[in-house]
Image 1 (cartoon, one colour):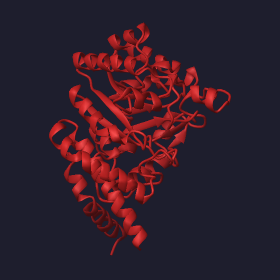
Image 2 (cartoon, one colour):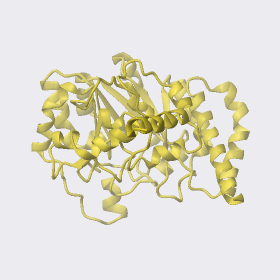
Image 3 (cartoon, rainbow, N blue to C red):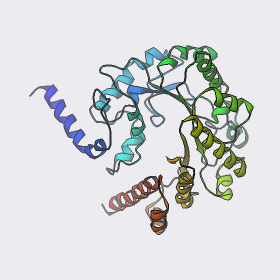
Image 4 (cartoon, rainbow, N blue to C red):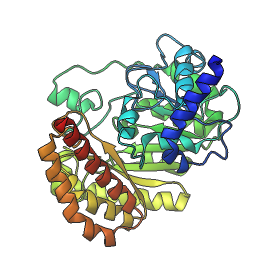
Length: 375
């Protein structure tokens, strides 16, 4: 039997394992199937100069901008290896987060689903269709689950460490210009994106070249001065606001230095802006031990604003995470959610599946831990 036939059979077997997942996906604009299209569509630039294929793949970057050009990274051996693995329905190196999500065969709200948004042409992709930037820790908040590598305020005040070096030179930022016309979406992460000076170079280039890709910003919701409003008028921004709670007490305890009332005003402004511009608006929720009890009401708040809620799975620091809990403690969380479920069944609309999918995932996590202890 030829190696090609054997390899195809293995691929078919792996696809069969993910048949339920694939049944939820649309391959109509895809020239071929892949478990995940992140390395076919995206480059994610991090604060260490690494170019990764997504925010979750920390351990196997495609390259580093200090040693390689973007062209060398996009057409390099490491990103090709990831593409090949995923096309064979096998999680590649560094894909541990999505492998963990898929471990219990529960595929709702999978992180890798967002890369299905882009068409896939035959052959090797010539250009990225999405770029994501998380290249600065400039931030005014000191969120309890965060660290100095993502927050300059934490690094200076809590960790008492010097400023991080700026690895992304003006020359590098300007070198992005030839890629901008090919991008359908550019994601700006932080820190707090509206405090990152390098991003203003990208936004200025887009304005000068009359380009209008979706500029997606994940913001802490504290910045809404004249400079930000000017950008909102000039470019189509999609906005996700990280809030992490529904009460002043919870939000201000988690998001240190914020003012809850100001954030809520800005949330409503951003929501109205997105509705007027026809862009997307969403809320993000870092699900943790400190706020899981407000998750249902948070989803209801998203319903009221007619926006989607996205859940970030906190694993670090482990003492804050839900999925890092011991079995007995996790069972208490699941019992609390079981008590909430009948009330939310009738209350939630748009974000009903968000809450119930996370509830089911936690129940399966409990069952998995119980099985491990019994073995």
